[in-house]
Length: 156
Length: 405
Image (tube, rainbow over all chains, first blue to last red; front, side):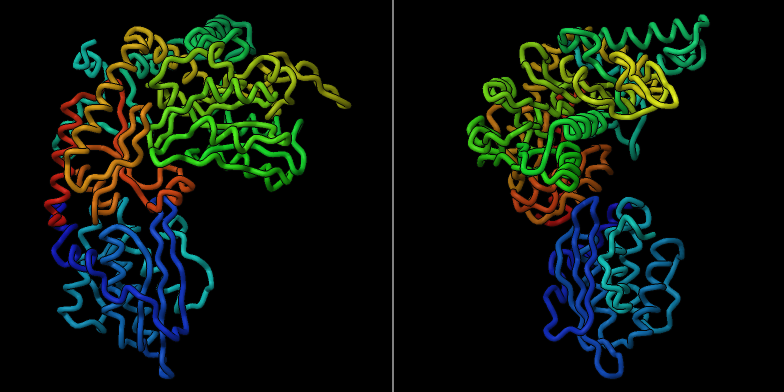
């Protein structure tokens, strides 16, 4: 049944108790995202160290279980990764959510990939894909320092 | 009034949604269409199509008569004084834009004020915002009370000698509050202030009498009235339509066009530039006939009972919180569910074939005021039954189960 695929235990858990839902002190990169259709908002904070490694990542915002869980899992998985690795993970995730069956990056461990694949249930709900991708696009915007708020209506 | 027979007239209910019977609770967004309306569009295009108001051939004359027949039917339906007080637009949004634009052009200047309410849909705020930007007018918002209602007093206290227009909804698409539009109009007119009513939610559910209400403008969305999309109606008192400038320029709305000047056509052509939504207008006659056949009084009674039943059922359900509790409430049940976001509710309900809307319903001002980012909304139409409410409640319980609430 599709609903069970969408609302897996891990999604419900992260949705209810999002990890890293706070504001990083001394962050050096950040970006905001907004879904005007449903009013979801997210603000991603990054602290990169001198080697461009993610020392800390956090987010603030409100949204549905899917968007909160997606942001929560994302922050969990990219912590400790290097900036270019983060970008690769984001790209892989967005491709998986859009069309691919699995994640292809060589950065995440298998158990981490399994965790991330829990979000793939959203593929059967085209109207909800943006809930899952908003925080990821916002993370990219933070890394690239675009200083532009991500609007889910203007992205794929 | 036999709802099952009425429901049978709507072909959409023959289809399954995720293998379930459709429980359509999104009529405030757009209503479903009876077969007669669907057929009328098909028949018009297959047997009778022509553009209207231009050519003299047989089809053109027949189509023009049909088009004007809808105008007359609508005039009677809302008891307007004159058929020329009915202007077809592409939607209620365009109807409000038409008034804001032409009235603003002719009468508004920097420092003038207009009064809206916190209940307004974006379509009755954004057009006025343009005037704030271009003309420097002020927009004041009458505040809701704790029940989600707008009182006469909340508007009265904002009125000043600079108030040039009061533009308010008839029925809130979120709290369901029915505004005292007759009293507000009387009050406004005592100070010579014109009144525009956003009737998107009022027109499909409530008996309308323009002469009794006395308002200057009333905007209608036809697709919420069991009619086709792409069509709205602006009711405006003749004195305004004669005084205000045209909105859009083009064919059909002119009288004489010379290289050095143009004179505009008479009503109603003055406001209907270009080829209009002809098939939709002609098919909308069937929507009016459909409503007349059932009788708007009967619809009001049925929907009011159903709204009360819905309130009762949802109040009994723990963790459901209704948004607003106006005494005079129309067919809207907005709610939140403790710890479950409206979009998750909508997705889970949809799996059971229960169609609702989730989000801010184009009312961000109101949601900000209520401190809510999103609400779930079940809205009713003539085809809904108590059984639909019960199914809604069952599906809400399923949400709670999935989220372990």
